[in-house]
Length: 304
Ligand SMILES: [Fe+2]
Image (cartoon, rainbow, N blue to C red; front, side, top):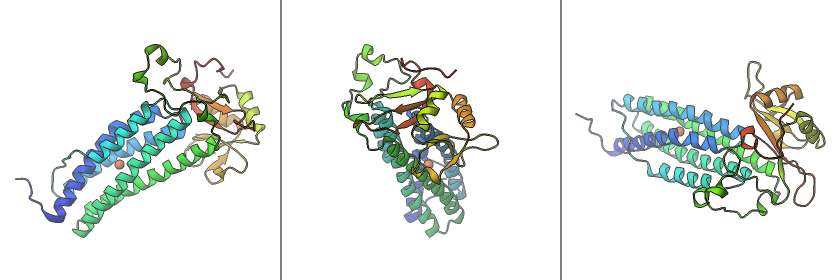
């Protein structure tokens, strides 16, 4: 006989069923979001969160077990809506820098929704004196808060890199027809994901040549760096360029060019840069992307 619940306990059970479904939806949606991201840090944050989310699915099962109930889910319409909105955005043919910001924004909406869900569920469990359940829900809540913080940092950096220069969007219509609406000929852009580097005439160009990258960085006073706490055991982790006066001081750590390029090659990266802004000023816009996303562009040159 299933256990009969009512009142606040019933509310908690329904919240948990909802969260259980929300997490399972995310396990399916996160790989697609990660795949669509061109920014390396964003992609790895989403992949990392996928693993965490798998653990969260199991943790909800534990919560149900602590209440001597079988884990069941019920369709979480809220999460369906957030995921669907994100999916629609990813299908638009946005410039890469904008697409990454959109993905990060969509992922943050997910986190905020979950944070609210886990806060409520935890408060209910506490009120009902279900210590084990409350403790488990707190663990997940903290993971969601941490994920949101990480995404917030990434969003901030993506926007800082765009530098307020509108040239990356102004030359192209804001919304392109979706890929499905275009003819196959138009859709057959020889880029990995059919995306454009919309630049409005101030071409963002990919670089792979080490000397060229080094010169571009040195002309701007930028130094090779890695993101703190992303590496370990001989691995420098995620590489970045550190610009003077940029807010990366707390999160970045200087490394040598050799280390930087070793990682650059290991991860098959290309550095997309813009030389000048729309107003003709020197641009610091740069972005590390998977080489496969730029490889077939005519200006791409393999390093050595
Ligand atoms: Fe989650």
